[in-house]
Image (cartoon, rainbow, N blue to C red; front, side, top):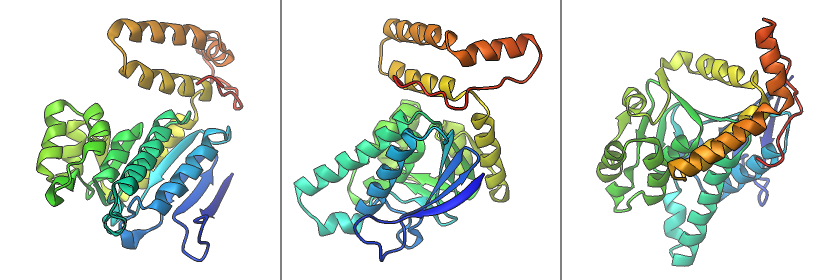
Length: 278
């Protein structure tokens, strides 16, 4: 089943929607819809993203989420003009807190999130790429944490980038502000793969379909445990992981999957399963 809808800005329905949503058999694609603003994370864009992520978190029909831009920009970070027009410490603190909430919502979403990058991904846009669970880019895409070039160190993007890359690679991006190619981004681990531009849609769709055919319960439980254990020492991490695997083993999908493996057949997952505690 496939459907497309637009998400209007709550406070101003006269403007074009910030996001376009397309639902297709368990895969939901959210496409940034501000190409003239390079799909910047303005107040409106952040609000639209947060609204949709909150709704998707409780929607068991959504099994995989894809975040996408256009061939000019995936996302060029924060809206600098808007930030300068509201030049107070209180505004800046509120803006970054709002963005942090959105990024954490991506991490805490039960469903896997794939970034589909076609064009530029800079500053907070690069942060969003690093925050997504998986990322695939067209070969013409470029990446940078370029705030340093305007005197603004990308500290918040550094949180996500620093957890995705080695320290030296992360600091290279953050200190220089230099752009890197999609091929280089794949080499250093910022994205999973770089593919020819004309194969990007097919590659992302194949990956999304592969995940959509897995157990939703196992994916949600596993994603939550993975990010939790990253913040722990190794002993606590193994304690958490062991407890979660034991809980996973007692789930209906695990029993079905193992039986299907032994019986040499395809498993039939519980399509409505979602662990309320994840």
